[in-house]
Image (cartoon, rainbow, N blue to C red; front, side, top):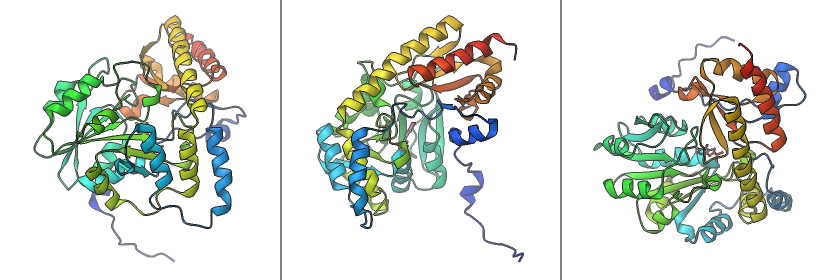
Length: 370
Ligand SMILES: *Cc1c(COP(=O)(O)O)cnc(C)c1O
């Protein structure tokens, strides 16, 4: 049958491009006929999930005929205790991504504006587009550091939200606590500041703040975080937000009742308490970050010092070809073109063995005339 479909999607959807994720391992295995593939493209934890989370999930299996707790009370309480807050200051979501959509739905009317640094995580602009709101981008400085004055200068009467990804994806640069405080103190109180702290656990610089202490002080600030990175639970989709109670209440109004599944709730609560897994994961990133820097220095490759579990590396004109050649050898990294950084690749930090494989391949390709 050949029906003529006349159903039309919303106009806002005409401009929307689907999110382009890092290539999955199986796809590269298939395309290149490879057995061993190393994925350094999505900033996942190379040590795997927290073992305590896996155990908690096994225990939760027999109750899967029940709906999950719509309020995710135990998980919320665990997060609240971890940060010295009350559960009313916490919301849990189906990954940090869902939280960004919920924030957009809760606070953006058509024609409203959000301010985002550039380049950064694409989901903020996606959320705005979905609601017919406008995205005002503020370029990072030439060394990819935040430009505080330009951020403040971009605020208008229509500004509803400022997103500050710190450490920033894909650059690894961050906002110092004094700069974050300065921004909050300079803004009209009607502007919601969202600090995306998905990579907060990998920061080793003392001047950093994930912003939670400023939520406690009552600023109109929401701190977003995720179980996908340090906790190694990207596959199960759990994230959370921390904000003053009234802001959380607004977001709860647009949340689906059962947005976080029962296994995710059990796993996430256990992972927060798995300090051994967290410490090992941090230690690995801190050591391997230095190891990568040293090797990149020896190669004469430019890079941006990162407070995260990835490094933005400048490969120049050959970046895309090197990215493709790495892929053909079973090493997946991210080419920078999606952030308008065609001369760069973003490399997630792996285990020592994975990083050695990456560096060996990169060394070889770097010397070739591609
Ligand atoms: C990974 C990531 C998130 C959250 O990802 P989820 O898997 O949806 O929890 C949020 N912000 C940034 C910048 C990220 O890189």
